[in-house]
Length: 239
Image 1 (cartoon, rainbow, N blue to C red):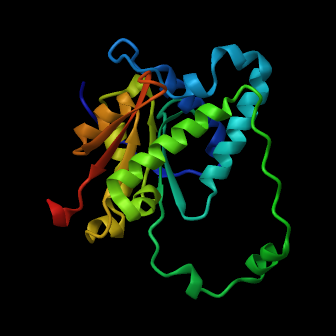
Image 2 (cartoon, rainbow, N blue to C red):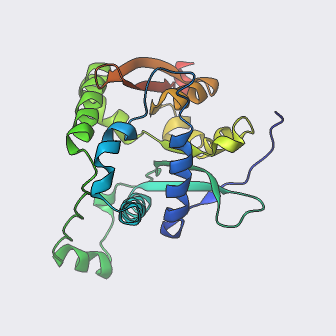
């Protein structure tokens, strides 16, 4: 299928709902027909627990979680919207924001200083249908894999990890490749100081390989029923 140029733009918290809907479409497309592995959310939100949380409550929780991610300090998010369907997001990427000056050397504004004196907001309770043990299993397994791959520098690799989504209806039309451009333009990557690291689902693994990523390790989870792949795009200096 012919590709085309897609225009990406910064995303804000007002895009959280559209991004959640995009996530749902992306996960629904994880190709059970071409891989033996289930997607991670099928373990995190198992069918036998779905009755514990009303659908609208779960959706609201996901939107709030996404808003928090979009507005996190040091994270920049880009989106591609459908050209003729207002409000429909067809691609998104979240990546580490380039840092030109250490935050420790910057003076605090009055607003930031006031924030330091306010008590932190209590974290929202997770939905009852979420299997916390399953999520813990994923986090601990991938943390172990990062340490084995990177050693003491595992935290650096984790901090550069991007997340990306693209609408399955627009596969092979260049959206995902276009969304990688903000990552390729990061000064740390261009200067050869930091590779781009990805932890991808089976579907994301195929896309990442098409963009030049190398598979460092395939990590099986839930006794081989799910998989994430640790992947890297080497620095130009290593090419």
